[in-house]
Image (cartoon, rainbow, N blue to C red; front, side):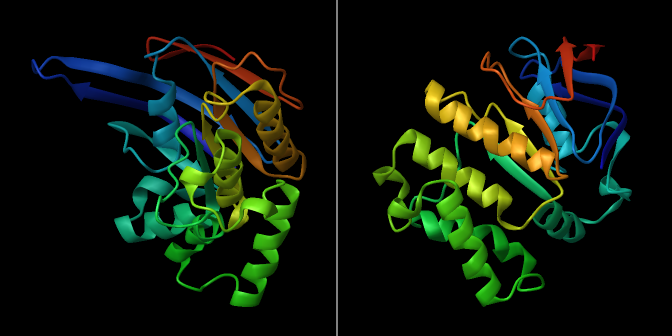
Length: 225
């Protein structure tokens, strides 16, 4: 499902010196797998995840998703492919403050420009996710009216809405208490068990059901998996 081949990414600091965030990393996440990426702060975990999600072009190497060369696409093709095939869950939620929970979830479908689900199917899909994630009661509330746990569950519903093939999660439990963290982790585990692929960056010490592999990164290098 996701195949990363020998990618590296460096950044220039304000003093013009070059810092290598990740170097020559290769990994593969297959359908039905839930893989964790662990390592100290600043080791390159998020850079790896953003490169995997077609958000940050590596200096060299390639990223294939479902046999598609993602960095061989133009920007419009990338945006459409990303919206259709990848679900993102971030620590900071990134909900739009002027939309309610229901609208924030539906916003995931906008880049597809009506090419996938019709309006009736969107409504059915939305209501199913609201019920499954236990947020039907707050569907008409704006993000500032939601608890931290509710905001993250809205973000998970948004990631799942387009029925992606892979979910990329960057510290999705970092702002959550144990109860809400385990709820989010269970949904990610279920997604993998149903044939999806999950790659998650985490410092979480909570038990994660169904993990296929734990990848260790330090100073931009894959040190074990």
